[in-house]
Image (cartoon, rainbow, N blue to C red):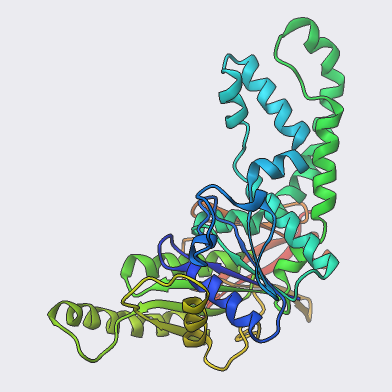
Length: 396
């Protein structure tokens, strides 16, 4: 099975590109699902389906043609399936704090619930071999990073916090009932979280396996958009996801231009050269600017042909190991692929068996190989697109 994530800044055309990829793959005989991860779903709009504004099929897949389905998650449906006790407790807690019941019910939809639901589906479909290809139409960049970082974040919580928190609540519950009206969670709340985590087991391996999962960044030839694409490239690399293509959408044609489009052409030509230098050797896939919006199966099929030509959309267009640990002649080194990183923009620390890499507001906890656990990170330097870290000296 293959998983393709289409990510980028809001408004660059991710949904159209993801939908066109699904159409192109299905026409090659590949059983394909296109899933929207954006809470503001527009996937069914891209296919121009004859459905009401709010009809998302209760979050279940919708068949488009044989071999092609789309899915727009309904967070309230997913709460009823997976988050019942968790949602119930948070609603009660908010109500006890003086918030009206209806508002408490809405506020209890926590950030991240939709991403967890998507991960549950991806893991389930992979285990059951439901589809040959899953195309993920990601939310804008920050939410996409949260999606790919959730498996490790949940794993950290379950290992470091969950059991202690559960025991502490059991110990405090009898006392809390006597001194406070604010309830503590019951055991079923913790059991729900544990079941969720078990259902997610293995999804991180799916996302970080370059033979299974590839990220394709969608961008436009504008400075702000390209800079966010660079940041997304760096953050996905930090989370050990393989990027196999950069799709450059809405490129103006060179002929038959008026003065307005000539100015855009000049600007785009300069930014295209920048994009080539930024992302080389990852292949670029330009898409021309269309004079009308792309809606419906036929228009998406035409976009897919323009994008992939004769290539199979499910192919791996480029692969590179994002993180390597080596130990030779007593020297232990970690190499992390972090393009566009500049000196002074990264902070390193180590706690137990984890190397913590922080860049701005983002951080990643890397589990170290056993041979590295007793060593401390020392000298770090940038070599080409890699952050190279020497380990040495035991902390014991």
